[in-house]
Length: 264
Length: 90
Ligand SMILES: Nc1ncnc2c1ncn2[C@@H]1O[C@H](COP(=O)(O)OP(=O)(O)OP(=O)(O)O)[C@@H](O)[C@H]1O
Ligand SMILES: [Mg+2]
Figure 1 (spheres, each protein chain N blue to C red):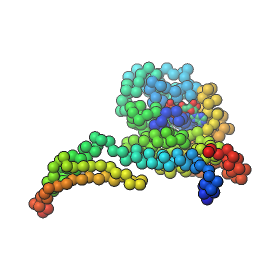
Figure 2 (figure 1 turned 30 degrees about the vertical axis):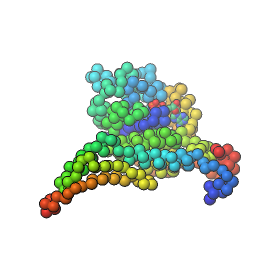
Figure 3 (figure 1 turned 120 degrees about the vertical axis):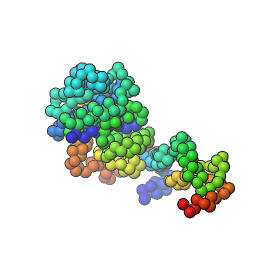
């Protein structure tokens, strides 16, 4: 039986879709079978971020309305074995789907896939309840800023109430330079506040934007720091023990640079 | 150490530590902020239980959440007029 993991955040735009696309692809590259599900009904993005937008015929809405079989609605990613996408309907809205219907889809997908990753919409309302209805586990994505962390804490509370565990944290768009000059909280600060398990830190990486533009998830071209970060998270998800990478630059030269560039 | 030396030179604290401090405070508030409806229900349920032992008038009852440092305290005032002795033996 596969694991169903909801990727969520509270605040919008922190990198849920980017993380779902890259972790799904990374897990497939690690020879796992993966289904990624877009739960952002009405504002679907996962298909375009993954470069599969031109091949979507059916959506989860069609499956729910019994217009087609689940297996027929899944779009296979031809670049790697074992990766499938279930798209969200763009013309419906979040209230058109019931949490139980999402759960039924997840329960079916877990019989055929090692991992089912659900890309949740932002917010704490219906879209979130739908996205998390079928999940056993959660990945909470946050950026190291006050609004995103506050909203992440709210979502963590809701996930705990729903008995979804483990809840793992991804800190995205981390900038060692900003941490160095004192204008960004580091991972220890964030963990001290949120108090959940950290599964990875993804640095700010212009490669993310380029890969999104092209519709090729970063992890296919594995050189960049962002791609490496997502590969490490995927390995941790499969149970490998890999220490958390330390992006912070230490050393005398950096301290001198930081001294001059620090925020006042 | 680092911070005290910086303070000697009159430097402002890093904005990241201010962010952390403010977040800690607001998140404790978020976590303890009890919904009004929940407070009203709790109020009724407490009164129901206490009414078995004490006699009090419902409109003299006060319930409040107070912050003390990092923790919150639920304070309930039930000024009573009489204690029901008989219930002691049950
Ligand atoms: N590590 C990163 N480095 C640079 N840019 C990033 C990084 N992660 C995400 N982004 C950019 O941030 C933007 C938002 O990302 P994404 O769409 O994944 O967020 P989201 O949480 O899914 O948003 P929404 O709440 O709207 O669904 C995108 O433009 C993406 O390219
Ligand atoms: Mg998204």
